Length: 303
Ligand SMILES: [Zn+2]
Image 1 (tube, protein in one colour):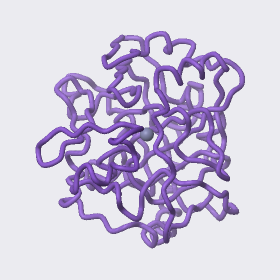
Image 2 (cartoon, helix red, strand yellow):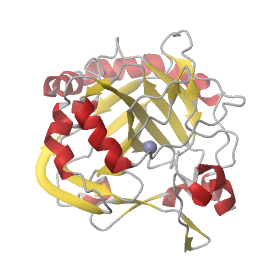
Image 3 (cartoon, protein in one colour):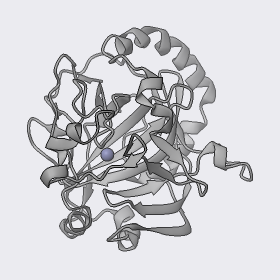
């Protein structure tokens, strides 16, 4: 896997040329289905708040009060919109959605990965298991630029990735056993770019073989100087730019406050984990998925 990173970081000149060629032709395609975003109203700058230790906490307060929400019962997804009028959970551009695979069109998103190795910061925040990343603002003593992607020429920093079981997005109405969300943020606009990867049952997953035993089973965290690269959780061909295939659409956070600020890219290739690993994941995550939301006027596109 590490060879992919090298393969991808080295040809900076090629990247610059390609970005010039692709950026001008794809910005319109992105804008014409984007929901209007008012950064100030959404409070997007404070949706994710870097902690002093570099961790990212997801704020779900409402007028300064912390609001409890869950995946079932009176504080479940059907009631999220009622829990706080400031949240966007009743909006028309919500996530996740059911994906009916459209025919692939010519490449309209230019996407490049610059994921670096990271030390291990695992948090069980009561809703999911999350791997947090150090952020540029917290790296004054470190030469690391952090991990990021560029999407249509704009830089989005990798804040964290986390897990859902079962999957949140569905394909032709079917859930996968689990889904990973890699959450990136554009520090200029506050908008997010989230990459979704489905986990299917199959061979044992080496990443989970290393880390599953450290997942906190209740709220808490696990810190280690052991490093890994998120590449290890992507389908094997993901960063060859000729081969990557994903579905994309404009949507929202799938948890309160459900802000409609997310460019979603869901990979059509899956990764695998063993039956035993998936059972353990499900036991820890307790069906932490939001049911699919209507597409309304949006389109899911493929490339
Ligand atoms: Zn998620």
